[in-house]
Length: 226
Image 1 (cartoon, rainbow, N blue to C red):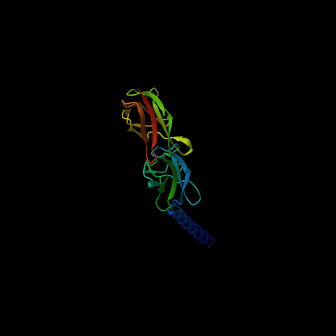
Image 2: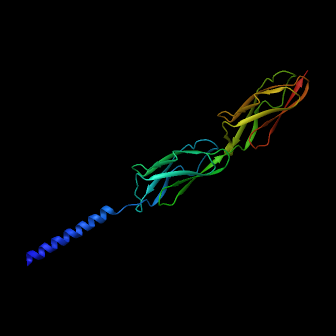
Image 3: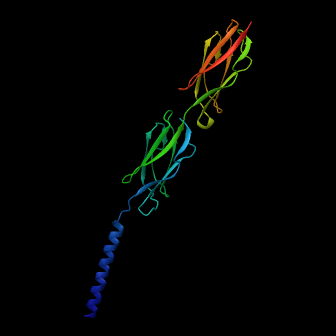
């Protein structure tokens, strides 16, 4: 009798153990959230690559990293580009992307999403040209029909006096004749554009305008002498 009871107890234990193993092996851990590790709330000139890559992490309900989870990235506002647009989380549950901002909109967003979890939005501030000023060469006097001694240098800046790089600047003679070369040029790493101004052939007042983006054009003046 004792032998039968012992055998029954052992058999029941085996069944319970087997059932528990099956439950453990069939239980699937699902992603619970996407967390932003780095790269949120950055700012850079519009149209340029953000200085710090964006990193997100996929986690489970216990906050543990989840590898091998497909994540997609979509530019929600502002345009630009993100590389890669989709990737699988690594052993730390992380995906790293590079985000180049669009050229026009000040506030831009990037959305990261994975199946079954709430998407997260990463934001960035695009700095746009806000000021154009003459750094050198305004109000010169020179011989009519001759190139002015000093080049015309204008500077384009954004918020915080940040130099705007690669911004097209246009020069146009308004009165007095003559010519400015080049007529259009991109700003350099200092946010500056440089041009030569040849005065008109008749002595007197010469004027020109410098313009970029949606900013109010700047007026240049020079006086030609006989």
